[in-house]
Length: 149
Image 1: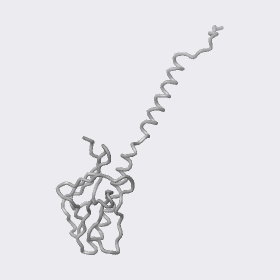
Image 2 (image 1 turned 135 degrees about the horizontal axis):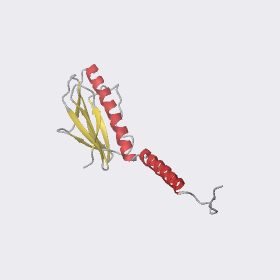
Image 3 (image 1 turned 30 degrees about the horizontal axis):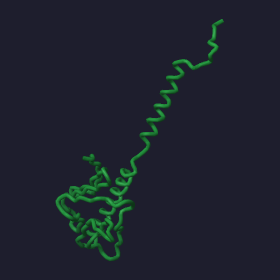
Image 4 (image 1 turned 90 degrees about the vertical axis):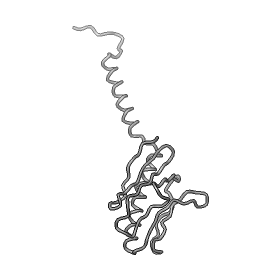
């Protein structure tokens, strides 16, 4: 019969298995946690692309030139759609904390009424997080992540 150690401790293999399980659990939890600023930025970008496409469709249907521009209202950053028919009410506020907006080459985004609107690009920023919305003028606006400087 084999002799058993009277200490009743753990073997090295058992300890290594426990450490490996803890490492896997820690990695899973850390990867599942998201930066709230990045999540808000993505949510705002997706929402804005949908609003742009709605405004483009309304602009073509009504034959009216429509533009989007960031604005300051009551010392807060907002945005507005200029030129939409009165019956069309689109949001003019960010969902959360206001974002910084930088439009490439202009102060406004042209949304119509022409089917081809020209290539346009804008960058949304929140803290060190940045995201880009762009179109080639024929297709819908697309969201792409841009690395922080």
